[in-house]
Image (cartoon, rainbow, N blue to C red; front, top):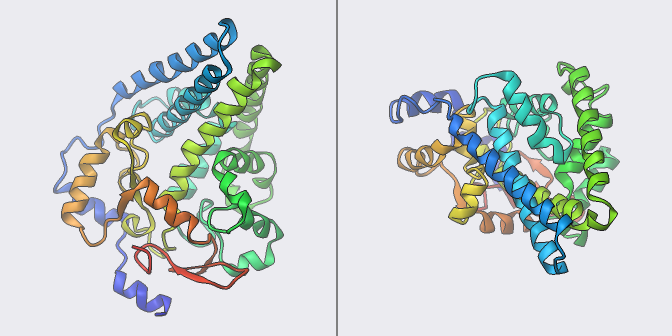
Length: 351
């Protein structure tokens, strides 16, 4: 296998700023114009969620129908979270207060403070995508895995570890990771030092109280249909995209979205309901562009960078995720630390 340095030289990493300069000559001038009409999706998502809650609580329905309504709630809750993600990037409305309002409710089912999300996702993740030790969403190196009992446990939970428990990962991990970070891991960690901890704590407590009141309102007899099933589905919906968008891609010294990010396609209806979140390379190039422009950017990337731009069906990306481990031997090599078996990342052994 070639060394990391040789492979990186062959790839000739390009910064996202340089891509943007080039793409500016080929995309419409209004590519970054806010799209407040995206807010109509909030009416749709919360209207459907409210209707599901009403039907389960007020009508005598067969269990299978209640389960289906719970599934629909989870899908819409995931969609509302994707909308909140877009809003908190500033691509829908200008007002920071309005952004925080929608972000608070959009991320409430996951108990994620909008202030925390802005810092975690907008600042740390977008600013340091797949950058070793700086991107909180990146999986660790073998060296870190050896020293960390926590990461040794996480490895067994994660896709590609070969453990049966890894097949449940998507159904809870997004909520669990955010909860642990907000309750404990953000304190005393230099990575989170610049975050407004007071605002995060207040928002997090309010979300916990709100979701506790919701659970009390629906009652114990409806917790499976109106809490547990939506919880599992919303986590799967969001986390399955986050993992495929980055976790089979290489580390990069330069923030090169065409190398460290992957765009995944889906059924057209699901793409619409999921707010085009799968078009993630596009989002990392233009994080403050409304995702209505994602496919336009995608088509231009295919035209300008046919040998660099990585895009595949989500199902195929999921298969690659589960056929490779989540620990890095070096920037372009994944390794199972228990078996020592090695795998290339996308563009370096995976195609």
